[in-house]
Every structure is written in structure tokens, then in C-alpha cells.
Image (cartoon, rainbow, N blue to C red; front, side, top):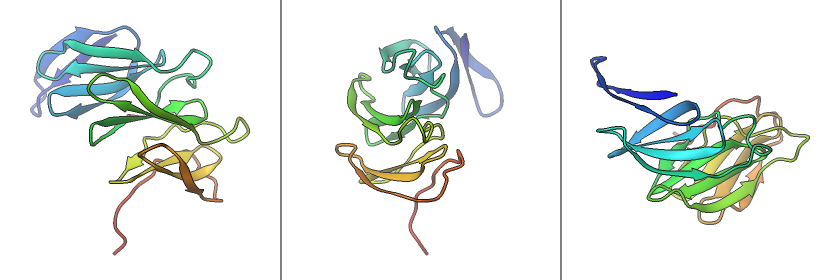
Amino acid sequence: MDAPAYTLDGTQQWCTGIKGECYGTLRRQRWGLGGLTDGRIAALATTTGDQRWSKQIATSEEYCPDIQGTPTVADGRLYVSGITEGLVAADTADGNVLWRTTVVDEDYGNTIPSPAVTAETAYVNTQHGGLVEMDIADGLIRWRSVENGDNQPSAAGDVV
């Protein structure tokens, strides 16, 4: 697939070929980070489209069928949902997986929407297993809601 980048006025800045397809990418400083349909994550230079790194983080049996949500970037980590039954945290510098947490079982479905991340916590909504809160240091689950997640993205913020 071709991965193009555009300026705010709609001018194409560059276009690069990349193996696989991508449902969403992020721009963070100089790198675009994204999840691909073949279970890989990749980083591209946002100024040129040159690939910095690519890591296989899921087998064909694990991605569902793709990494569908746009990964979330926070404090040097890339949080990727859309992996069967779990959430993966990877280092943005090299794509190395820091932790992987199973948040649902096969009866609950997958974590498809993009995760929300705060200073110490990641929130991911699941298709049928509700909202799940995890510690970003190690991926340990703190709690889960009893409501059906209904495949909606989670949100985080202060209560006012």
C-alpha cells in the first residue's frame, strides 16, 4: 500500500510504499507510528516517509483480523489494541514490546478501539467485555466495568 502524508492545506508531502495496509497512523514529533493489517507496527519519518523500524507483534492467529484502532502514543510508548484479546505496549524508539496483557477471553471479543492513556493508566474498551483499566508500568489490570463495551473508544480526563 502507499502511505501518503499531507500538509494542513491538503498538499501531498510524500508518499511511500509499505507492506500491508494501515487503518490509522499517528504523528508524534518526527515519526508516524501505526498498526498494520499483518500484525506489525511500524514507524515512518514524517518528513520523508522513510521507514525507521517495523516489528511483528502478532501472528496471523492473533490479530483480529487486523490492528484496527489507531495506536495511542504517550511518554515514549505505543499502545496497540486490535490484537486478539489484548493490549500491547511497545517502545516508540525501536518497537520492542514492553508488555502484553490479555484483557478479555474468547467469549468477550477483541479490543478494537484506540486506548486512552493517562500518566499512570491505560483504558481500553472491549467489544463485549466492558471498559478495562490497566497500570501502564506493567499492564496489570486494576478493574473492569460490568457494562458491555459496545466497541466504542474509551476516553480519559479529569472529572469536573
